[in-house]
Length: 342
Ligand SMILES: *[C@@H]1O[C@H](CO)[C@@H](O)[C@H](O)[C@H]1NC(C)=O
Ligand SMILES: *[C@@H]1O[C@H](CO)[C@@H](O)[C@H](O)[C@H]1NC(C)=O
Ligand SMILES: *[C@@H]1O[C@H](CO)[C@@H](O)[C@H](O)[C@H]1NC(C)=O
Ligand SMILES: *[C@@H]1O[C@H](CO)[C@@H](O)[C@H](O)[C@H]1NC(C)=O
Image (cartoon, rainbow, N blue to C red; front, side, top):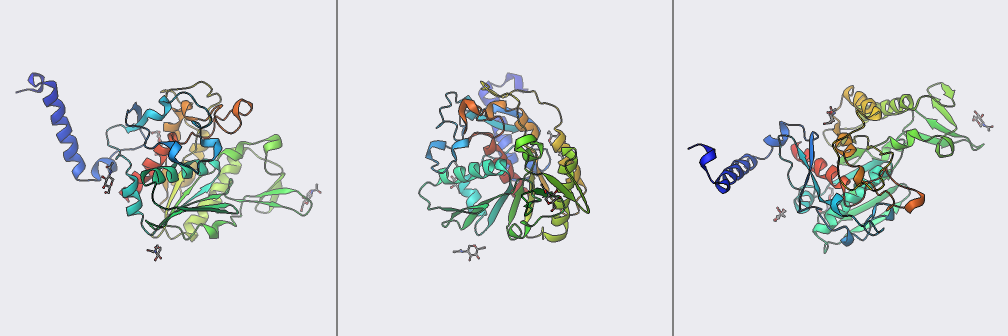
């Protein structure tokens, strides 16, 4: 009997069975395909949590509370081509992570991903006590019930900016003085990109210190590459990657204009120049560092930014960060899938 003579229900039952069989044996289906190539598909069961039950989202990410009227942007699930991305189960994630700590290190895109993760975990078990505090550049978030900690360390360039006695701000491309505070974690997820582009009043330095030479400025991709190389050298020499799993969040793309966007598109702006530099640096490293390759999948999501429903409303349109809930949840679903594969 060929499949064309089977009733539709039977055919889908067979596919369902094959799908279940494939999944029983866990990892194969995620290991032998690229999780980062795929499509956004509409999924009625999304979002993975209700952001209104998350009491600690910062205003800039809390699009619904800031009045965003459209909700379709919450309903998309990332579907890799030819493999199955396991549905995120927050309880399982917490149980597997028992006794461990994860730290995001980077700019506000790190904070975005951290907020998404902590909200997902809190929403799945709202009765579970949590503690949170901010000390200097670090925000701590932990669940005593699971003995898990999720931290974010704000350090936009990874390398240092120091202020001279005369007020001059110097970008020190060879120096990574915060690194000692990152080392003891079980999982590290780095990110840096956005601030490298700022010029004029938003530029964070007056001078660049690069080895023995000092200069005012250079092409930003060059500076970015030099800083990433300093970071890579530190990981290669200082991080015990048998104890600490290291990820780098791929460059999170901006969209020049995102106002009024409500659906994913299939168009990207092509390969992201910052992402190409990052991939190049990672490829030359000795230690294993995993790229959380979110650039392309996020390029499809101009609808995922806060737009006028972020921090600044119409005066400061945000096409850089991502609403929570939203696209950053998928970054965490992918992070969780990669952690399962290790
Ligand atoms: C990241 O994902 C994009 C899109 O799937 C792909 O073109 C690119 O090669 C990937 N980069 C790496 C280093 O795997
Ligand atoms: C999530 O995992 C827990 C623990 O394994 C299980 O009890 C629960 O049913 C799962 N939830 C869903 C929605 O699959
Ligand atoms: C929590 O995890 C840490 C690190 O693994 C461990 O040292 C500590 O004993 C754990 N605490 C509890 C209450 O299980
Ligand atoms: C401040 O000091 C640095 C060296 O420490 C020097 O290069 C820079 O020109 C000084 N800036 C001003 C405004 O004097």
